[in-house]
Image (cartoon, rainbow, N blue to C red):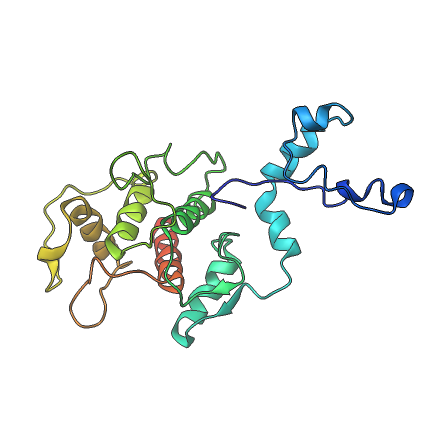
Length: 228
């Protein structure tokens, strides 16, 4: 999985002539599956399609580590729920959950919520309107996720299944003035649903980076709100 795109490798291809020549040519290294392969091989498209459609479950079967390498004690119950509900995207499976989450990782997590909430017609987060770019036509997939960005994506996901109240709810955070205009309505929505409650100091810290475990806690609680 590289930048959201799956690539399939045949790690044996350069070994095909080893028994005959005693050497490995590397002639297939980094070749495409089109012209370079078509001279002597046929691409089995149906199998390729099946692999792509089942990539997430295949990756989970082959991961030899636990669903997370490290997490905080407070987050473990939420991560256990996230794992049981299939919310841990393969791109963060087995990683350190105390680390900051990227925009791409969270978009993948939100799509897991979308699927778990009962819609198997998985398109893309952008097509569904869950994510927008960061300006100048860029999505910034490797950019680290802020709290207000995460809440905004979750609010858009919620709106795909439920009616969303009109704007106007008062935000109960002492730093509410720092919340970007685009995030104010989703923040009010998730606060009203009990999904979002701030940082324990009366503040939201909207521009702070969100860790993977914090993001998965939000994902678990949003799914509960959708199913409630």
